[in-house]
Amino acid sequence: MPDQSLPETRTPEAPEAADTARPAPDGISRRRLLGTAGATGIVFGAAGGAVGYASAPAGAATPLASVGERRVMFHGKHQPGIVEGLHARGHLVAFDLAPGAGRKEAAALLRRWSDTARRLMAGEPSGQGDTGVARDAGPSSLTLTFGFGHSFFGRTGLEKQRPVALDPLPDFSSDRLDKKRSNGDLWVQIGADDALVAFHALRAVQKDAGSAARVRWQMNGFNRSPGATARPMTARNLMGQIDGTRNPKPADADFDQRIFVPDKGEPAWMANGSYAVVRRIRMLLDDWEKLPVTEQEAVIGRRKSDGAPLSGGTETSPMDLEKTDSRGNLVVPFNAHARITRPDQNGGAAMLRRPFSYHDGIDADGVPDAGLLFICWQADPLRGFVPVQRKLDRGDALSPYIRHEASGLYAVPGGAAEGEYVGQRLLEG
Image 1 (cartoon, rainbow, N blue to C red):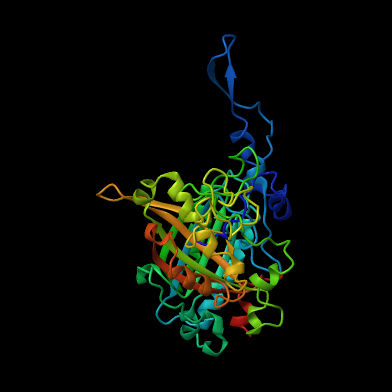
Image 2 (cartoon, one colour; image 1 turned 135 degrees about the horizontal axis):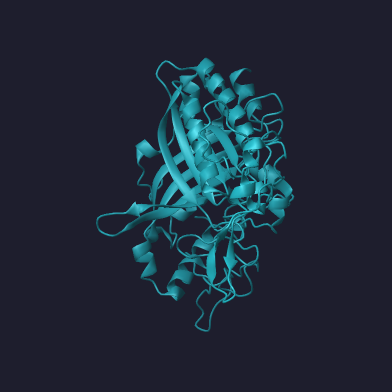
């Protein structure tokens, strides 16, 4: 879990929320129902105790809460779900094309998925057969993102259009991969700030697949809810560590160069797209939580309380890699996770991470199946994820406390223009 990790958690005050979120249009009929549902309040008696609930007067309208009203646009230069801040709820799902399905069926499916994504992200019903699960909610920052796996191109006769950057990832010593929960022809990322809105989108995507594709694997994730902290803060992972201090930011001069394929990149259909590496990383929490906090901090290289480097300062202070203590030992240990993953220690390799935490229950021995759904974005995984993971493989102090259990690499094309569907330049080019 490289230190250049998570974006800051979105809150109503966070700048990235203001940049990407827009109020839902007044004409969205199913969202008007929030008026009566959101107007219920506790009524207090003279003694100050809660004595009951009162509904809003007939005809009264309560506007959407700020979390619900935020909208991300579907059409654009890049697909949504890449540069936005962390979502409170997410679903990842991979599909394989059905036997006999090829390029024609894939194009029809991406057309359906794109139309559904456009509708849902605007806060509208998905179309005929909408389940009504999200009927009372606003768009809630919903995003849907679509990508192609290595195997997709062989199944559709498009091998010549397969990017070199999509070559399978190398094996790593920390891998304990379940092939049934890895890879896939097609990949969909869903994120939202409301659990029902996210599930509604997942169900719509699955129904849209119809007979053209079947689910290969599906995973559920979560992050802290917007507004849960008193001020915008970098997120914490399930180990309790602040995780995301050095994530690249859109304001960085070289952000686009590192994260997106250039307009004249190869292949042409990937212009303004990106590559997503997806890893299901189980955290061995029972072992981790037995460590004293000082040892946990030595493993990471940062203070647990505020994310500041062990060399001193605040969360955003530069890490002094040469600083030693009174006995001459490095303050930030040589194998500390934050030291190993620094871009300046990896030839400038950088990734934009937008992961989710996950918890899939507790086994018969009382061990939690929990960890991180790691998602990182880069213009080329051979210059982003791969060199950093190789270095981690050679001696990361965090390795004994995590296990990589699933993996995928996907080519995510640029955004769809008005009237287009995602992947149209590939499938109709």
